Structures are given as C-alpha cells and as structure tokens.
Length: 102
Image: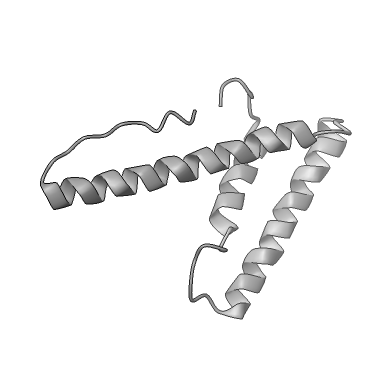
C-alpha cells in the first residue's frame, strides 16, 4: 500500500467499498441489496469527484485498478487465514503463513 501512497479519501473508499459489497452474502433481502448498491454507487461517485475536482486527475483508471487489486488481495488473505484457523482447530495446531499477495 505504501507504493500507492493512498490518500485518506482513497482509504475511505476502499473500506466503504469492502463494507458495502454484499454480493457474497447469501440470504440478504432485496431491500438490503438495494441499499448496499445505492451506497456503493454514492461512494464511487464521491471518489470520481475527488479525482476529478480535488486531485485534477482526468484519467485515474490505472490507479483504481491498483486499488481494486488491494481489495482482492485482502480477500485472499482473509480466506487463507480462515482456512488456517479451521485447520489449526481440526488438527490442534497453529501455523500462519502469508499468502504473499502483497
């Protein structure tokens, strides 16, 4: 994350995007999905305004791709940690190894 030198606005976007991305959550009501979609749209619009008007970056696609990769890596690490935790409980061992995504 240091190589990107993320601003507070970008970190806020990443956190909000992660929080309101509900596509992997089964059993949510259509109202909950609609609220999450509306909020996701709003945070995307806010990030666009930040890049366009505050940072004056007309082309921020490459930066957004790198930020999206951070989200994907974080999900991969969380999944790996869940698997390790489950295995350590099953076999009564404890071992953590980073996935090396970052």
